[in-house]
Length: 102
Image (cartoon, rainbow, N blue to C red):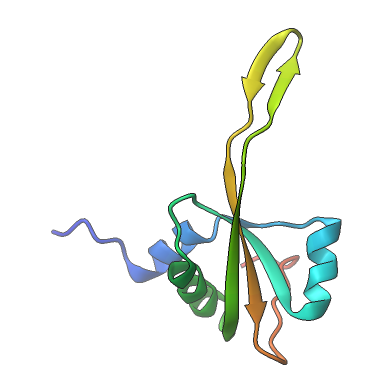
């Protein structure tokens, strides 16, 4: 037996969740969709996963790391987790409806 995951499972591990904010909703007008991805995900992996799961053509992938904020709750300090976001630009005429789920 090998450690390699099934190709479909790997794609589900690459795309964690869509980011649904006012800013990402405005970007959808320009054929861009934002996803939360693992810190170790690379641009080619993200593009491959989006193309396989949503059956669309990816034009470009931009990534950014959002460093966790230092917060305080009832006198206890903690740090939010660092997350990585991927902004996926789709080819002309392609669209993903993130509100319906997978």
